[in-house]
Length: 594
Image 1 (spheres, rainbow, N blue to C red):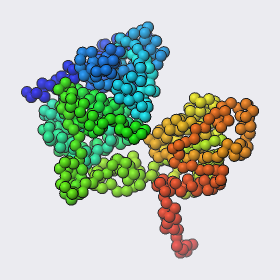
Image 2: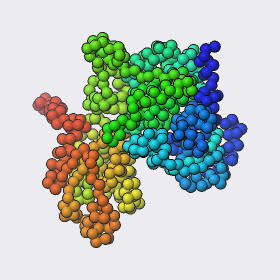
Image 3: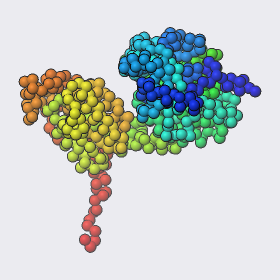
């Protein structure tokens, strides 16, 4: 029996601890829960509960109490002394916090209302978000996505032991979803004494293939491709596309040498601390080695362009705790394509003077958007095919054109004229979401408070994203006075397609002079409250892709400028191509006999 055979029976900090109750106990819990308060788990919390119930968070047996939480923040240790770097806490609203102080139990439910676990309340407290951000993320900067998410969560925390009713259901990639016990059994069946885990949240290309293959060969073991399919960094590619890419790549590995399984983890983007957490989770899945990349789980740079974490800090932290967590850190080696040799080599193996070829993620996205060929030395054709299914060229992908500006600036007129020009072109389906029409048909119950205006714009963004998701063009023309709400809409729509923000600018005096409805006059007379430009502010966009000054530009000139931008950026065929296609399609002379 090898050392690995002995060690893999245990998990981090002791025996593997799945938290699913037996059938009789489940019946008891369901009956008792009729008298309890319920909490519908957020997406992050649902990921945490799933991994907790499966045993991936061993030795945790529930959400952390204040004592456990404080120890993790200050020393990265549980009260038992076991290393644990990331708080796993249940944050709830004040009403739920007060309710559990009476019943001391809480039914945890998925978004559909199905009970997935029971929480036996041991502790209730209010968190200091600033201190938590500083200690876990090393910063209080809200431009860090982990800090931003923390700032938007409730302050009240509930800790206690969890008993599982059932793992949250999944209807996609069911053959790729394995618990720690199931993966450990698979490793045993495959005869792997060592297992190298590779975490990934982006598509894999040939450099990743070479890196992982080398790492498994050097460890004389099997390879686990273990992508995160819970929550990753905002803006990451959807996991459906990524998993199809991983599946397409798997046949390149020697039969029996690699396995693919999905990890429903909610990443915090906490850099070094999170890298250590990822290693612990892989130990619980039965892995002996874990590949840690440069800036592993880091969110990139802050608003000033400075990295949040040192590029090697994650590798150094995991290496320091190797003896305690029982898993070996494998540093990510930079692999590059050497053109003269026609193969990939580690950076330190490249002969002097040899040309290195690489394509960055930004370059790849641009090439896909422009419909350019992706070289086979970079990515296998089968992976590129999957990427093109999700990322068609811009001229065939969904697009949100978001026009913002004061009432009377000309947004609705330009939107209608632009839609006519696009429909004349005929290459795309077009939907106009005009501010007044949306107010009448989609948001008729809303007023004009800050909250209701935000809600109206978010509804427009939701509909536009759905249109873009199916390849159409959505032209939105609301006032949209608040910068933060516009940014939220940009983020949502960009996840579904492309997004172009057009600031339709005109001086307030010009807008008032154009006001056929008399709205500005009513606002100045106090008849209309919270009117943008008079009693409520309009926050000019600093991130507009195009600014049109309608005091001097006609409607036709304004539309021409937008069409020019769309063609220049590849959202529409160029005018030359359109004319050429029309000439090709037109018969040279009438058919004989007509």
